[in-house]
Length: 184
View 1 (cartoon, one colour):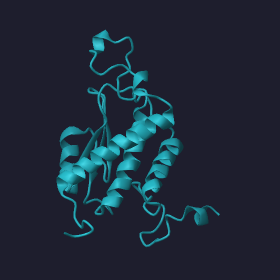
View 2: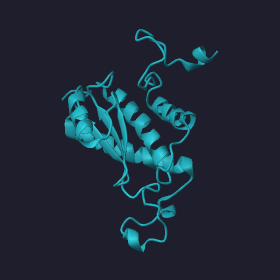
View 3: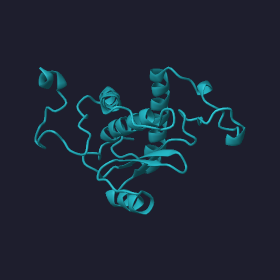
């Protein structure tokens, strides 16, 4: 039996993703200083609730993660169900169902390793959780959501924090993770 797993089974990766998402959700509740008791019970029908807030940080439905192996699968999903398409990770709000979705493909730029995918999950889900807080009536300021997202990703691997549509550095920049030197 090998000591270190080289390739994750897709089912194991799915379960790890769910576990990591639940842990991040709990971490964000702690950061926002809230508990599930601050929101309505999800088993109570919407018509019988005292508040319009939903049970999931204020949203009516759970935050959703779409994790695919191929970029083309994610692109087809966007073309079918989303009003617009973006390259890279997908953060999309379905207004009718009050769902914030995060879409990732392990085939995307640098996402082949589990560590990179884990960092990207924490980054994208952090942004979605903050933006979805109290029903996604407006986006959080970018400095706050992106700052917390980068901080959460750096907790996993401080060298993998270059997420974004347009990078502000060259592809050959190997020290982008070294913030202290760049800030100085």
